[in-house]
Image (cartoon, rainbow, N blue to C red; front, top):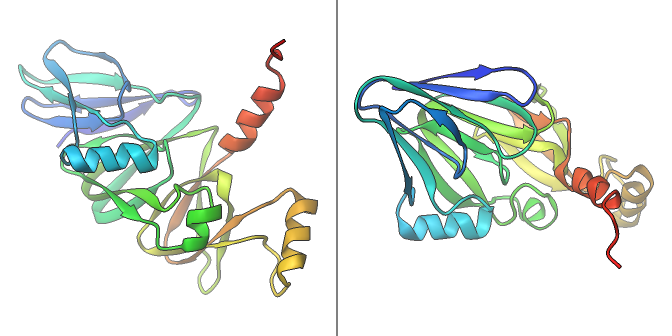
Length: 235
């Protein structure tokens, strides 16, 4: 099984080490450099229909990069498509759900699927991937990336962890997610709407159960809005 390490802290690389015959897969365009013993090809991971579904509903690439150490041991550098941090998740016969664009690379033994979001509220309002989200399961190493820094947040025992929808990166199957309009408890719909407007908070996601949720320091919608406001206006 391939091994992975993170090189650097700001805008890092992931370096994958492969023995002869070992393989990994990565998001399209993630390869930055590699030894010439490695062959790189584009694969419709999970078959044509699953790849079409993944590209259509999660925003991930139709073709993923498959790297195989064909002619001996070697290594390769992989990089995300936007500035931020990368985290390695060591999976042991478990499952993680990822928001759009969070997948970077993983061991070839891991399975990728597109599954329906169980939370209708999160599907419509939550910014967590819509009605369908990307799921990675099995045993091996998974690398995820996010805009800005990534922090692990433990779900409190007997309580809930509240995460702003734009900052969510990934969460394990051991926790359950539902959407809420604001963090305020016990208020009616009007109160929730007013709270969302006055705090700038919008939709939040509530996690219960046991496990750690990965959150990012930058929310993509807010960052895109900030960037757009500083671009020259046409005309």
